[in-house]
Length: 357
Image 1 (cartoon, one colour):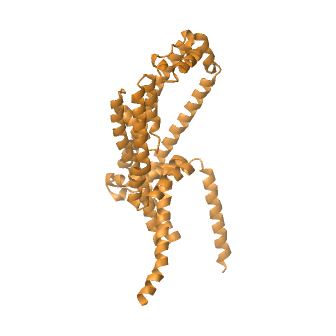
Image 2 (tube, rainbow, N blue to C red):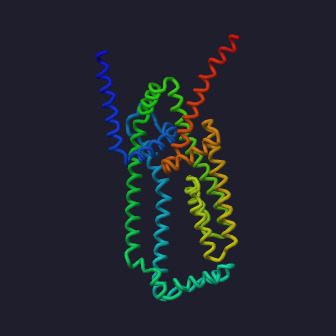
Image 3 (cartoon, rainbow, N blue to C red):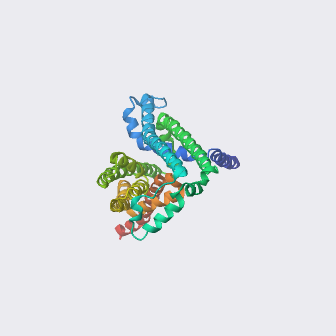
């Protein structure tokens, strides 16, 4: 076999170059994965926007519009949240200036708290009740701690923004060459796994789409239900709070950041029963949606058992971070498909022997 050493050398060189390319692009791999997830999820919509299939491989207005639409859907609420954060930071700055000049008197509701009222009022007076106490408590601001935190936050925000622009650029590229890329992926799957490789790839695609659809449905439903809860609790702007909760609800258990903060605001305003009721309502809704409804939506679309869907969601997030929310169920769906094929192959000889007997 004269070509055997040459083939082996090419294989080793290909593995080396693949590892080298992965090392060069390792910091961009999560961004590439996010772009692929968005492309797989929205590919049917892009196909409807595509005027002619002959336009594959070219930048079309449909690809540009869909990319800009996805960018605006994600950036618009983030921009609004950042603007609100800047407004609150200005109010916080005024509060700190007042505290360092004359101190801040404890709120009336603090003393009415059972068991903790007198202790809480005493602690408040010791930390913020007078100008001297407030200056001592807020000394870290003058030592540069706040400035350092602000610089780090601004740097992280800029990096996230540039990363998101990279995702949109890659997404536009995938729209442009997605048809050829899909054919190449299916061909590679068929070469590696045989005829069943195409089915495994289709199962992985279905799992990704089911995960995104489950996220969207959970986010919309939880946003509407929590918006009603905010209105009943007496909070201002319940529709905006509900929309923010719906966005955060796409990530398992992340919505509690919003309704938890709203509960703290209600406590600060003295509405303790409303705060307890809102937090309890939000926790029950979150536990039910993330532990039962979301796995059922994802698993039902790809015939994945409930327990494996749930473990795939939480195990994927623990292992890979936020992107593991998609990778976990996808991996479980492919593994379950391989398992079913293996079981079918085991049972085939048994059925043949039974028929012959």
